[in-house]
Length: 474
Image (cartoon, rainbow, N blue to C red; front, side, top):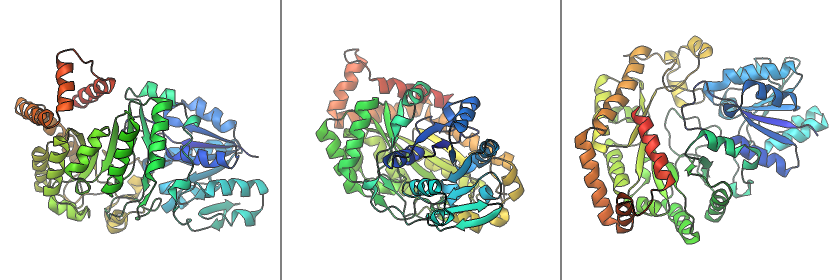
């Protein structure tokens, strides 16, 4: 049987902490379950020669790339076709824009939608060599002699996530990731989908529903990760981990019942937490939460359809800090119609909420989103076709700011906030808040006092966190 190489194409700028890639690990596990030979390659941790060699030793080359990196994927597909390989593209961008890949002349196929079930079907159909078998694969689009001969709709979303095999982490060089990331960061997911209607999110791959894995299987996987890889921290990559609070309470209870000791990070929304939940999460090892705020201006929150208010954002940040959890927030500048007054309102909310780390991106309308359809007239399509999109540049032609001005606003928002955050008055305020926290949570207070007196050694994760904070100040 043909052997397939699944590759994750590296970004032109690595903005997020380097960690294992989860998507191709799930696909690798699905192929292994069907006894289909598979190799995984994450281009972020190999050089170009390794990538070429990996392509050379496989028969089918599958690509996964986020929207900012599709040009690089096309370049690698060109190399693969020069070696006579069969090429296929999957992922969120391919699910909404198959033409950019098929029209390039370097991709034989595109596979739309969730592919854990359809990719093995494709490989079996490819082995048989009959066009009618390929035409029966849901989500598949394909070219023959320059003509589109297959164009199937994406398959239904996978309903029972518990039926998916655990991601094939053993096919990835986990030690290499840990060498390159001092936190020893690894990923897990417990849900797919998001019911909210933010205009900038691509939803074609995972949908607007909300599908969940069972608590037992989640904690089984957590236990496997902890005992097998000894990670420094585990990031739940769910879009909104705490949408259903009851299941997170159940998960925390099971983590505590099994006596699992590890630190973890949650992604969620400000309106999907409360103080009892945050305290429970902290007891079970949660030490960081990443919130997507996008703005502190109610007008901009409404434009982006965040369904949030500044008051909810501020209260969530205060509860998070009170629970002893560190918070990072994501913001957007340059949203449609944004003015300096809106930016100033965001800066005011930042100071009232006082998160620990701020990351700011420039508004980018991506194909397949409401922002693309609603603001197409403002998108420079030539710019988009010739340049990468990223957190600090966009092809969106803003009504009030140039691209250079937006980049300065983005950088200045972070700089001015960090100067304020690390200033003496705020340091003193955080000291008082920590003191109140330790009084409310005497177990952690005794540990902190022991470390201060040199009786209890600091945990390795605390040292890592110090390095993260120092890096953020730089």
